[in-house]
Length: 90
Image 1 (tube, helix red, strand yellow):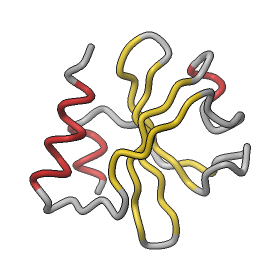
Image 2 (image 1 turned 60 degrees about the vertical axis):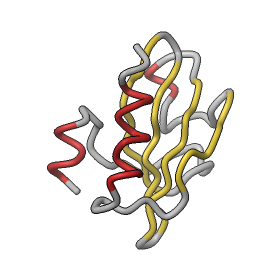
Image 3 (image 1 turned 45 degrees about the vertical axis):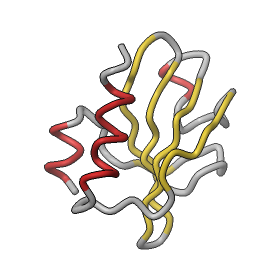
Image 4 (image 1 turned 180 degrees about the vertical axis):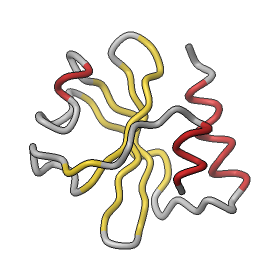
């Protein structure tokens, strides 16, 4: 997972203090849009989110949220393509 985070420029995982998510890593897309990789026990979910500022991530719930992938798998090419498509959006 660490190589995935580095390759796609995600942050390190950290506890979400807003209690909206459990543990998250995020990558900036553009403006106020981010991909959030949520770790919930042994499952990973990928969300397309909006925050007022980068500093709000992990401290406040997102302004908007669309779950893109439930039960994300590193070895699933379709899952990785979705992540790449959103990150290429900028």
